[in-house]
Amino acid sequence: MTRIIADLHVHSGYSRATSKDMNVATMALWARKKGINLLGTGDFTHPVHFKNIKETLKPAGNGLYTTSTEPSVFFMLTAEISSIYSFKGSVRRIHNIIMAPGIEIAEKINSKLQKLGNISSDGRPILGTPAKDLLKIVLDISEDCLFVPAHAWTPWFSVFGSKSGFDSIEECFEDHSKYIYAIETGLSSDPEMNWRLSALDKITLLSNSDAHSPGKLGREANVFDCKMDYFDVIDAIRKKDKNRFLCTIEFFPEEGKYHYDGHRDCNVLLSPEETEKNGDRCPVCKKDLTIGVMNRVNELADRSRGFVPDNAIPSRHMVPLVEIIAEAFGSGVNTVKVKREYERLVASSTEFDILMDLPEPGLHEITDRKIADGIIKMRRGDISVTPGYDGVFGKISIF
Image (tube, rainbow, N blue to C red; front, side):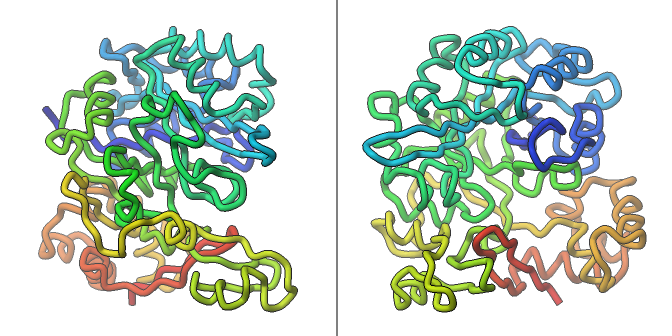
C-alpha cells in the first residue's frame, strides 16, 4: 500500500478556455511538483488529445499508464461529457466524468459516442444524450468504468444545479441510480456541506481540480492508501472504504465562483438569507439572481450545519501554495518573484508535502518567515474569505 494523491478531473488544451500547455507531458511535470501521483488524462474523447495519450503514455499493467519522463506519475483514462437535453418540460444540463480501465475501453466509448454527436468539437463534448442513457452506454461497454456526476452543485451544469439540475440522483438517473457510487463536490462546495443531505450518506464524495491550466492541478484532490491500481482505487471509491480512501483535499468552498448568490453584472453578492429577502431578484436591476451552491444545499438539506455522518470521509482545506506566496509578498500570482519562490520550494519537496506534512520548524527553515506563517495560519483555518458568486471567484485573505 502507498499514499496516493489523485486528481481525476482535468482538461486538455482541446477544451474551451483551457491552456494549450495542458498536454500529457506538461501535466505529468506539474503533477510531480504538486505531489500528485495519480492524474486523470482528461478529454480522452477528443481525437487529437487521445492520439497524444496513446503516443505518450505506456501501460503500467494495472489499468493505469505512465510517461517515460515522469515515471512516478500515473495516469487514469478520464473524460467529461456535457449532456444537454429536455426532461419533463425543462432543459437539463448535466456534466459527468467517465473513468475507464484502459485505452481499449476508452476507444470503444469514443466509437459509440461519435455516433451520438461531434466529439471532436471540444475536449468536453456536448451531446443531446440524457445522463441516464449515457451512463447505460458506458456500463454496457465495461462495468469496470466509473461514472461520476461532475461538480454536482454548480448552478448551470450539474446534477443538483439550481438552473438546470434535479433534486435527487434518483430523479436524474432513475433505475440506473444504483450505479452512481460517487459525486464530485466541486470547488464551491465541500464534504461538510454535502453531509447535510442524508440521501448522500452512501455516496462517496470526490474532490478534483477540474484544472484548465497546469498550475491549477491539485487545487482539490483525493488521498488514498491502496495499491497503485485502477481497480483498487475504483473499488475504494465504490465501497466508500475509509481504510483505503483517507480524505479529500479541498478549496475553502467560499473561494469557489458559485458559493453565494449574486448578479455579476451588477456586482451584487448575497447570502441565501439576503436572497430570500429580495425574492430571488437582483436588488439593482430586478433580474433573476444566480442561485449559488450554499443556497441550493440549504434547499435540499434535511440536516443542520455541522452534522457529521458516521461513515464520513474527512477533508482537509488548503490554499494553493502560490496564493500564499503571492499574499506574503504583496504581489500577483503570475509575477516573476512569486513564480521564482514557488519553483525554488518545489525543487526540493512537493507542494502537498509543504502544505500538509512539513513540521512548523521545517517551514521556517526552507522559506521566508511570512510565507511559513501563512502556511501555518492556513492549516489552522485562520483565514478570512469573501465568497465567490455568479462566476466570480471568492477572495482568500490570510494576513
